[in-house]
Structures are given as C-alpha cells and as structure tokens.
Length: 308
Image (cartoon, rainbow, N blue to C red; front, side):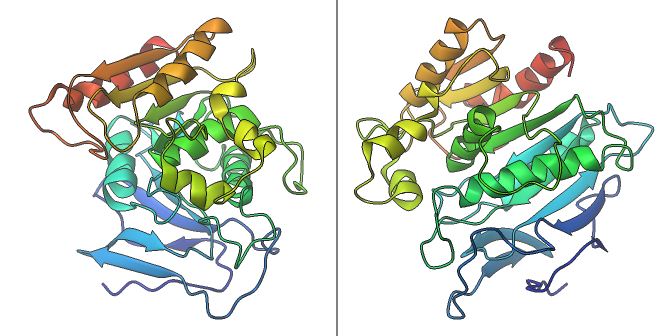
C-alpha cells in the first residue's frame, strides 16, 4: 500500500490495521487551524514506510493521532497516548509507535499514537510549546471520545520514549499550562505516565544535547531550561509513573530517570523505576537476552497493581 501524507484536514478515516484484532482510525488534531502556525511552503513533511506501515516521520506539519482500539470483549477501558522518540528531530513511528500500539492492544489497552509537530522556528511562533500543544489536545480528544472508543476517561495515560519521554513527562507536569485556547474544560492531565529511557532534564550536564537544542535552542534562557527540566516541575498533582532506563545508556544518561523518580518519591507519588544493567538506548520492545527486555511485562504488572 502506498502511503501519503494528507495535508488537508482529516476528521476520521478508516485505514489498514496493525493486526487482525486492532481497529485503526486517524484524526486530525487541529481541524480548525493549528495554534501558533507559521506557514512555510518549503517545509514539507516526510515519511518512511515499510510493509505498508509508516516507520518514521520528519518535518511533521500535520499533527494527528492514530487510534488503535482492542476488540470490545477484550478492552480494559484503559488508553495510552504514545509519544515516539527521535530527539525532537524525527519520530520513530515503527518500534516506538506501531509496535507499542499492537502490544497495548494485545493487553486490552487502547493505543493512540501521537504524530506531534517537531519543534521548528520555521513553522511555529514558539517552537518550545508546539509538541506540548499537540499532546494536550490529543489527551483531550481521547477523553471527549471516551464513550465511543470504549475508554474510561479516568484511565488515560501516556507513554513516551527518549525525547518522546520528555514530551510525556512535560505533559505530566505542564498539563494545566495554557499553551493554546482549548475548546472546553476537558482535562489534559494523564492519569499515569510510562517513561521509557526518557529525556527528562534540560540541564546541560546530563540532558540529551540534540533534544535540548531542537526544543529550546542553542542558547536558551535560564527560565526555559528550568521550565522544561521536568524534574523541577513535579508536585503533589503529578501523575504516578512507571520508568525504565539502562545503566549503560550512552545517549540519554540514566540520571534523567533517577532525578525524576526522586522527585516523585519526595511528593509521595506511587511510582516505580527499573534500572537495567545493560540495554543501551532505543530498544523499544526488543526481545534480546539483556534483562531490559523484561520491561513490557513489568509495565503491565504495574498497571494492573495500580488499578489501571
């Protein structure tokens, strides 16, 4: 199947499924117009496909959600917004998007993949909030459609990988920030967050330099650094988190997860952190022999134990 990027507004379209059990739809996040848009005709969205599925996006201009619903008889009522990684320069839509939605569906959980705008001064008035705008609106759309999608609006979480983990933790700590004019009062707060080898901080001493540069620029203000260092934004209302990192991660230091977890503990927020000896970075659901391959099962166990 030849896949095209639709630049016009798409409200709902039925497209091929990830597997025989899932139902997939797409929805445009901003049919009424993207907030803070700067139009640049030379900035063109790019995608890569494999076996009929999109595996990578670059220069995203048309933010959307890809909705994968498990069969009604299997559905738990839980939904998870999926934020693929890519250093805020691309979206790893295959192993950190499609594969995650399929895994969630296998466990009776709705998986909604977020194709978020990658921060760029060429298409955004304020590139630092572009991804957050998309994430907030995606959460609100999920809750608005909870009945139709057989979802419990009190069991809607977020999962993020690498830079997508930064976006997921940003949504978890900045969900109430007014970064656009919302159409209603539906909450954008995740009920839980699943942070997999996440970028958490913008502190230059242990951030991922590419993610920091792409999101807040080469010479960010102290205010921007503090605001998007999400370990500094945790409070008593931050949602519970399940976290995974490998000690040998040379791309995003494990300290990112440690400092966030420490703040969750400080505010008595029920959370869990798994640090594996090996695994490196970017493994997704990789079933290798390293111990990090245990994280998907541990995650499902945590969700069950936490009532999600």
